[in-house]
Length: 144
Length: 119
Image 1 (cartoon, rainbow over the protein chains, first blue to last red):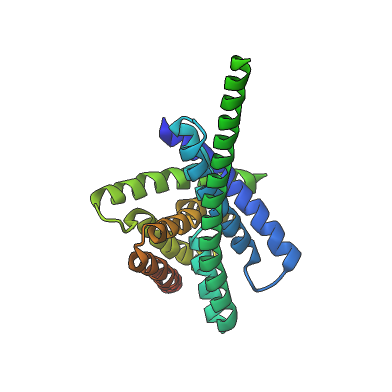
Image 2 (image 1 turned 90 degrees about the vertical axis):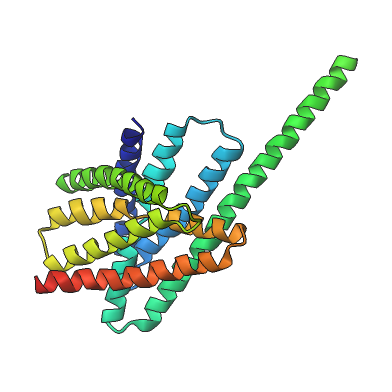
């Protein structure tokens, strides 16, 4: 049954990637692969955020997390196109662009993964604080 | 409209295959190195290179290339796994995962391209 959830997420992830990366590519018309770069960076943030937020605060059944993270975002981002685009840049002697593409993808992806984790923790702490306030407010009214 | 269905069907199958293959490979290794994602990303890079060289009809490329191989491989999990290795102070494993995936991914995509051209 989990397979089906992953697969359904995969459908929407692949479609969203195809649509977004094609429209970015068409609007830039550059030999630099902005389309794949954008989906990979956006996905790196979302995957980390959802993975940690669901671990910390959301009480979602595992199958939904599989659908969204493993299915949707896993398919939304892609490694094979990243490799092939690097080959294309190298074959066409665009070494500068190849190095920029690798660095921005890897380091940017790490940074955005970190930001996703941090954002999930920040939300979690805010929720904890609100919970504490509500609790102390409740205690105060009870005392009156 | 056909492109839509080709990408959707490829994405459906690719995501399920990634889930099955990466879990299976990871279960065989009790090490912190993420062999599961590592393997699917390299396999997918080879086949995308192969398919690219073959100049197949565009609809087939949307199905197998953009849909299946795109969904079978994943960049977000790769980055999150690298970040988690860093957070667990496994710097060397993280660095080797990042570099090996990228360098072998490029080599395998090129190899796939070359095999596709010669076959």
